[in-house]
Image 1 (cartoon, rainbow over the protein chains, first blue to last red):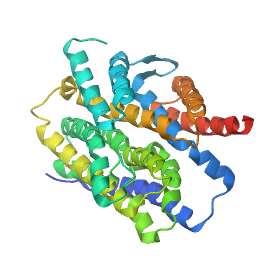
Image 2 (cartoon, one colour; image 1 turned 45 degrees about the vertical axis):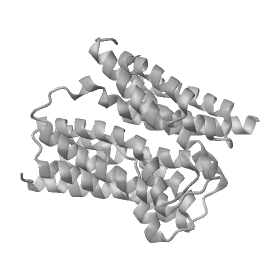
Image 3 (tube, helix red, strand yellow; image 1 turned 90 degrees about the vertical axis):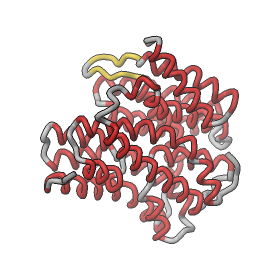
Length: 110
Length: 234
């Protein structure tokens, strides 16, 4: 259980960089009225970023080549999506997703 | 999810995301353990840096003995999407004091941001300090504890993926994006579906040229501009 000096700098430096990325927008938005164009842009951030986050786990990157599908994740995404459509409950989607993935891994699918 | 914006409601609403934090947190702890990071380093990364994907990247760069400057730059780039999310989320807290804004901002994550956007669809765009703090603090503590437990268990469990827990995070985003899609009456279903298709295509194409974090950012920004253009056409 120890921490070297370079490790301490990594924690403090990265901590500061991350904290500023998170808090500066809050400080600025509270004081300034954002232009209408920026607000318009921001209304699309939730749907765009959530879609991109989903895509991040459905595709596998290959530098310089086209990405391929992460088949196991794509298969497990089907019951998870259906669970969302039928129950509209986030908790059910997560539990069904985990169970589907456990089954896929057990039978070595994907 | 109800329109209730109390601290208690926040504790209840954040529950589904906890699975994602536990799954990925355990995975991070195990990776950190196999990369020979001490428990103190794991705790420092989780409680002070507190940024899932950045923590994995920092760990791999430490193993590769990369310089501090490179680690800082990567952390900034991976977390630059936080600037977008914070700017978006901050709109709902303009009426609160600067201190409360900074407290909320300091714990914003992909998950708590997405959760808050879903909540807004139930509350006519309103959010409260109590509700957001409950979600933020639970997420923060669960993440930190899960990574430490993972680091301790690391020497015993060799393959945590076999239980499917690594999929919790993806499942959660699938659930959140679906709930966003059906409940955001302001943007409408068709327009959101078009934006989603565009983002997926932009992500796929970007992934040929960029790493997945840059592709994520590029696809998000292009998707927002595409949405704005769509709005002009209708």
